[in-house]
Image (cartoon, rainbow, N blue to C red; front, top):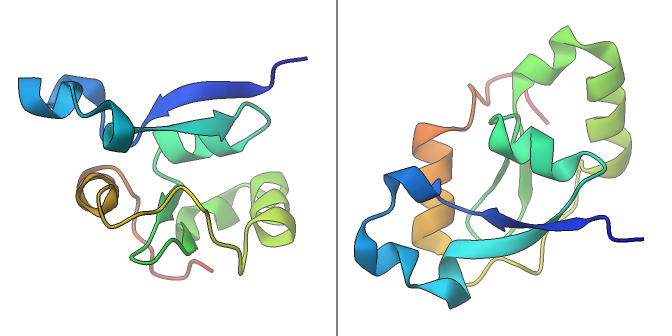
Amino acid sequence: MNLLVAAHIKKRAACNEEERKDFDNVAMLACLLGCDGLYERGYVAVGPGGQLLVAGEVNDAPSVADYARDRLRGRSTSWWTSGRERYFRWHRDHTFRNPVGGF
């Protein structure tokens, strides 16, 4: 059963041609059981160093908040590297929802 998908760290539509060809850094594998959808919609981001950030807006949906609290809070990802940080930063600046009140 394949539950991983190739996900762009920075949205492909926002990448320039050089960034689109930066295969080693602009993409990552994401789980289809929640992380990919949460990341794509800006409810989850990756902070400098790889720590997972969860937007405060997840509290508006109790089941999402429970999932994030139980499975994501306090975790980090091995997908973070210094080469990928510029793409993760782009995501934090352009897609990540207000982190105030997040965890």
